[in-house]
Length: 277
Image 1 (cartoon, rainbow, N blue to C red):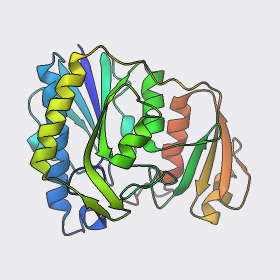
Image 2: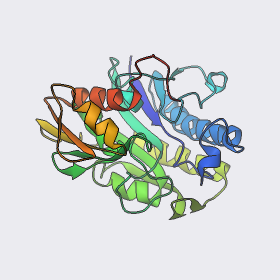
Image 3: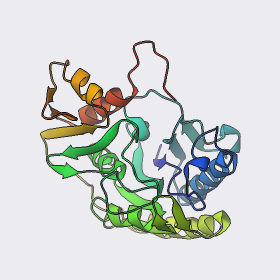
């Protein structure tokens, strides 16, 4: 079976501009989750029409209960909720996954500009650096995909997100669906217009030869710059971790799968098993 994988976020979707759209207690979330699902389905349908047997979609935003499973067409399956070891990329490890797309993406916390920019968990990480490089979610997700032999064929979001994608997916279709005017403001087309754009760009991208893998070399020395001094201090209790300043801990990993698993653990672990979101 030939599978296509979609990693889906919400901040980079057309129309989304502020925290009102991000979580169930926000007055715009019900609309935004539909915009997110529609953008994902535009790419998923292009993949199914392009010859893929199945599409795996990982809901990678907030509580990971954004995409309504009832909206999925035949041939699409959904990864949802937390915790999961590969975070937004859970499903990339399945046999037969041949290509991936990142839909609704945003820039990293320390990137240049971008609406609602953060890195995985804005309440946990101020920055993540891999071998001295400040990364975004897209960077690490693409690197993990490369480790599994899967190239990135499309990245969508605001212009800061697609500019960032030039670092890790320069030969992918980079689809700017809105313009960031600031951290909480955008110039956006209608969600329907964005979906039409994504459908066209995805179909064209899937008709081309697959791009090269993104495969940064290991071992991987990872610095986690936490928002909380206490979080850094307590992570340093772990034998593989050492604290390098008041907010930063460092660990070394042989594989990107290990990096992703630790990134997931450091932001999601709860001794009670009750998720923070």
